[in-house]
Structures are given as structure tokens and as C-alpha cells.
Image 1 (cartoon, rainbow, N blue to C red):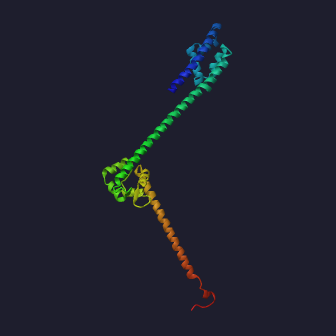
Image 2: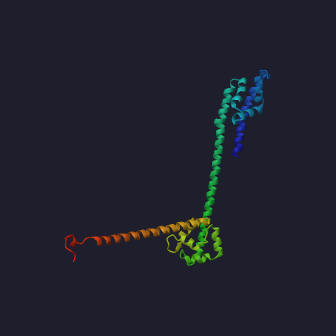
Image 3: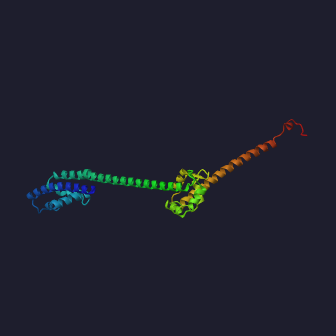
Length: 261
């Protein structure tokens, strides 16, 4: 709709200028011979309302150089040259800039509405996903403790409908025990709802997501074991050094020159 009204405004302004130029050109042809070269140039470009409107449109749209279109007007009246320059400046600096600004504002408004719509859609999907996860957790938590044990999780996953349900949630549970271990972040063999929700959000997606998280889990465990091993080796080396120093330290008797008995 904005595009339509912009076109209407441009056509209306061109029409107003075209009426004025056509009226002045008509007076010009009453006073000069229309067969002269100058008259023919004026007639070809400003000999009527339609040719004048076309010439004015070409002057601002790049259809013809505005200098060439202004030259015939100098034959009609010396005042038409500054008037034509005013038309060019008015259309370029005023009207066309307003039109461009309207289009930019309209495009920005459409983009903002589209972004807002996408945000609402994503929030709706997230809320639905969290609701489905909560339903699964409550069904699996048989004893109502507020956390899932490995046995509860394993028993619940025996149901083919539950497996299909997980697939619908974009969660790969083909390796159920690994999946449970990744959810159990504190390693107490109990998965709370917060752990379950955070874990499923991270593991959501293709099988590659589970593989990557399994690799991260393995690396963290290996790093922890390595740290413990380093501390253990450091303690043993420290103890060995102390024992070695005690064994090689000369006794007080040897320092006084008393032979050992």
C-alpha cells in the first residue's frame, strides 16, 4: 500500500510541473515559427502534456540526461532553466528521499514483525518441549522422589511408545545407559528434574549431539583421573625424597669423627 501511494505522489507532482511547462510552451509556439530547429526540439519533448510528463520522468529516473532535457526549455524562456533545476532538486532531495525513507521504514517494520513472530514461535516450541519433558519425568518417577534412578529410567525406556516419544523430542536414546550417565552430572546415580531438563536440552538434536557429549564426558572423567594420579604420584615422590634424605644424612657421631660401632 505504501508503494502505491508513493507512485501516486510522484505522478501527481510530475503532472503539476508538466501542466505548467505545457502551458508556457503553448504560448511559445504562438509567437515563433514551429518549423525551426529549436521549435522542433521543444515540440518533441514538451509539445503536449504526455510528452512533457515523460520528459520530466526521464529527467529523474535516468532515462535521459537532465541537461539534454533542460536545453530546449532555454529556447522557450530563460526563467525555465532555474525552474527546471528547482524541479530536479525538489524531486531528488525531497520527494525521492522521502520515498526511499518510506520504503526503508516499511521494510524495517516488516522485519521487526517477522522477528517478533519468530521469537514467539520459538518460545512456544520451547514451552511445549519443556512440558513434554516434565510429563516424561513425572511418568518415569514411579516412587515420586523427585529424581530418577537408573532402574526407573531403564524400566521406563523399555516401553516402545516411550522410545518413539523421545525420538519425537529429537533425543537419541539408543544408548540408554550412556544417556543416563550424561544426565547425571553430579554422579550420584540420581537425576533431578533440573539435571534432566538441562541435559535433554543439551542433547537435543541428532545422534552427533549425544556422541559429542559422550566424548566431553569421557574427557572430563579422564582429566579428573589424571589429576588424581598426578596428586598421588606427587605425594609418593615427596615421601620417597624424605626417606632418601634421612637414609643419606650423616649421623652426629660420624660428624664428630667417632667411628660407628
